[in-house]
Length: 179
Image (cartoon, rainbow, N blue to C red; front, side, top):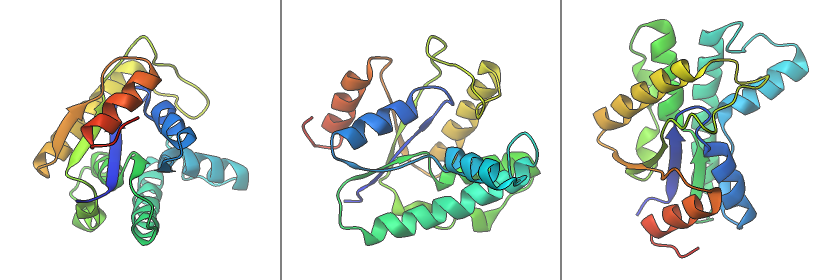
């Protein structure tokens, strides 16, 4: 059984909050590439930012996601939870360029075949200095991700719209672990 689990879905849908909670419970977690890239680019004066150069940002996210897979695969910890994945990054790159990028998808088979999707949740959606897009754009991104995961034959489990503790318990039960 593959032990690399993806938590994907709507921007602002509570993925990072769930990852932080799982990490606090002692589980190995990989933080979202996009947030890490924004922090690095901002600190170094770089331009691979979604509001400056979306293609460079997406290309960086693909590279970082591939590196994250390799690092997690070499770590014996089980399970590992990913806040977004290579599939998210490759989907963003293809959306940005308007062309298929087959090399971007290499490595996606390392993940468990069920992805946990955070659905659009208007009540918790907020913008911040790193998330500058609105709810409509987040929903459009979610729709693209659903199609991408389905096209790759991933099973999709929709996270419940519930407090983070309940979401974590639900997720752990789905993969055969007790909270």
